[in-house]
Length: 372
Ligand code: IPM
Ligand code: MG
Image (tube, rainbow, N blue to C red; front, top):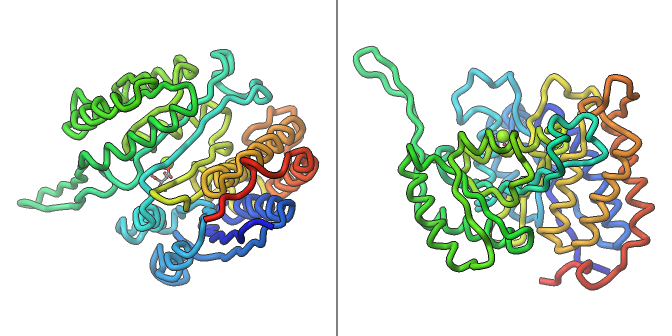
């Protein structure tokens, strides 16, 4: 019997609760199969927390998250709070959680699915498999910001600042990921305009000498967003800042066919992680059983890999998703002629596939959870 799993579930807003429910079904299936005792706890974040407790990240949520091995998060964001100051918006709960948990890495894979070539916008450009490594706890999100008024003229500011240490640790993570992949890092910045980017380049260049097997290229962010569309298969690991990573990871997700497929892992110095679909809360779809749960489910695959070191179980979840996509699609990835499948049913199909696949996954070795 494996070590106990302790997972904190933060459903959040909009479609968050319904996609998270599907992710939880997958977690339960895996835990049951491997006979791992599972402790699941739910807590509030975002608009749901603002509504009940007047704060987007209640202390009780943070305490539960800190006590857990992994956090499964739905989505945050609700237009009802649009007019509020930043600190009173649902999003503040998410970026505070990431920062308070010390999560400085955000991994966002984007892979082409041959089975979805009929709807993927760039399927003719060949298969791609890239990983955005986004810096997550620094940069313009966390710099000084405010609004000031001088002689009746209002202005607003957001400061981007990065220390050498912040750049070095995210770059190191990116190089380490590249070592396990195609050994290519592309670092994306605006070194033609921004001091932070100039320091970024300098630090990344210096670090590169410690990874002689990994090739490094630097590309400006504007050019990179064009190259991503022109030729996505040229990218392996994309290393970039918090804001550029936010933009480029969503662009990369769209190339796969739908942002609904996009998963993510936020990591720090330990094996703990926050696992969430990389898309938003889609308030207009909330409660309609229409949202695509695959991004949330693939985030469970990332949890198995990064927190529990269960590479084969992680692969099994990915296979189950591929098999499911052969026969079932939510509305965002269906062609007009196709019958669409609802969120709950999609989750059930993945679970069924997983139950079929798991017995053929060999127990032991790399698949045994690491004992602390
Ligand atoms: C994301 C989101 C968040 C971000 C928001 C909700 C704070 O867009 O995870 O990409 O900007 O990081
Ligand atoms: Mg985003």
